[in-house]
Length: 462
View 1: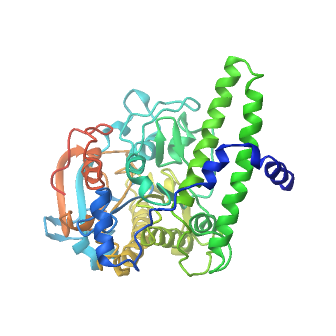
View 2: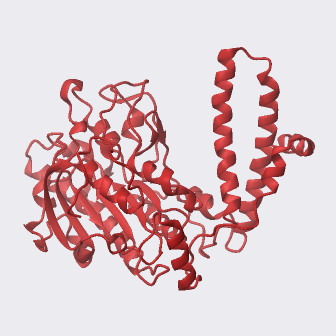
C-alpha cells in the first residue's frame, strides 16, 4: 500500500481531474442537525421538497425483514380499526400501538411457485422489496430494483449516504442456495438494478466506522479525512494506469475495462459527496465492538446504528435483514436448540408451533426495543424520530409450513411526519404489497413513480 501511495503522490500533479477533486465549492449542503435553528430547518425543508416532513425535518424510511414467516393465529390482532387487540406475537409493541398500523391482506404473489416449483425462501427474500418474479437460475440472476433503492436514487443526494444496508447474517454465499435459485436472492434485500444486489454490512464496528470514522471520539473526523485522501490517491493511480492500458486492448477488453472504470468512478463520486457534506458529525460514543457472539446483542447494536444514522441524518433510507429467509439459526438461549427453519415446517405439531411462536415473539421483542429508541429520541423539529419515520417490519413468507405469500405479516410503524393514520389494524382486501411501497414512495417525494413491481395502484388507506 505504501508503494501505491508513493506512486500516486508522484503522479499527483499530472492529472487534471485532481484539480476538480481539490476544487470543490465552498458552499456545502449540510445535514439537518439538532443545533440548527428551527427557521433554518424549515427553509431547508422547503427548498428540498424531498424526504422531508411538513416541519422540514427529514422523513426516513426503513425496511426490517424477519425470516420464515409467522405463526398466523399468534400474529394477527383481534378486532379491526382502532378497536383491536394485539396478537400474542406483537404484544411487546403494546406501549407503541398508537404509532402502529397492522397491515392485513397484502400479498407478494410474484413469490409463489407456479411453474418454477420450489424455492420459496429465495423468493420470499428476493421479492420482498422488489415485487417482481425472480429468474430461477444459480448464475444468471435477474430480479428488480428494490423500493429502498428506488427511494435512494431519488433522495440519496440529500444525505452523506444514499442508503444504509445492515444485516444480522454473518455468512457470505454464492452459487445455488434454494432449489436452484442463486444465493444472491436469498441473502439480499436491496437491489440497485435487476442484476445488482446491494450487500449488507453485518459488522457493527465496520458500519459505525463507515459512517463516523475510526478511532476514539474526537479523532474520527481526522481519521475519516485521512482515509478519504488515501482512497483518492489509490484511485488516481489506478485510473491513470488503466487509461494508459486502454490503448493496447481490443474492443471486447475495452468494454470490460470500461465496466471496471465505471465502478471506480462510482467510488470517486461517493468520496466527492462525502467531502461535499464536510466532516461527519461525531456521535460522541464509543465505537461498537465487532460481531458479538450473542445474536440478540448483535441485532441491538445494528438497530442502534440505524437510530444513529437517522438521528445524524447520515441517511434517510435503510434496510435491515435480521436473518435470511430459510435461516436455520437455533435459539438455545430461550430454550430452543432446534433450527428455526426446521421447526417452521411443523406439520401441525403443537410442540413445534409453540417453539416457532416463541422465536416470532423474540424477534418482536428486539423490534420493540428499536421502536422504543426511535420514540424516545428527539428529532430536529422537537418530534420523535419515530414520528418522522416510516418503518416496515415483516417477512416474505406468511405461513412457512405451507410456503404461502398472501396475507403477509406486516407492520408499519411511525407517523410518516404526520401523514400516516396510526393506531389501527386494517385489512386491505388482497392487494399487492407493492401498492404500499408506492404510497410510502409518494411521501418520500417519488410522486412520479407510477408503477412498481406488480403494483396495481396506491394503497389509499394508510
